[in-house]
Length: 163
Image (cartoon, rainbow, N blue to C red):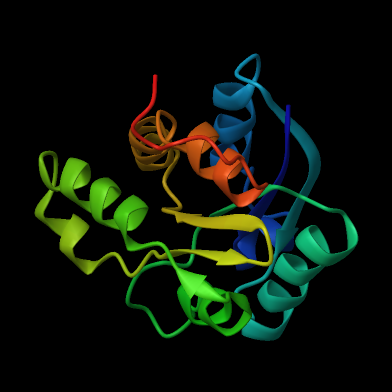
């Protein structure tokens, strides 16, 4: 069971002006797959608050996986990747590359995603898009590799090529 935190980044969601269907979609998709959602929160598109939520999820709650949704585009308020970059120890570009590649099959707008993934301590942070449809598509691309990545971060000594 991997302890997971979900952080929705949305000004309107934070103010209660919009239902958070993306965060709900993440929870539904993870249900029964070995991921325990230990924290769910909505924060505004403010870099300091996003950064604080990421640090809290990992440093204080002990989340193995933190999934963010929203704030990965090009508008001036889209700062989720910037906040993530400030708290990670190293990037894991393969997840973001795979998500963009899959999304490009559906829309050319995938090219403007700035989503990134990285490691803080022994936890993984994955930025997902804000649309409920896109969040499910991108998470489904990542799911096959997440357990292996999280096990490695927790110190699994087995060979990566072993069955």
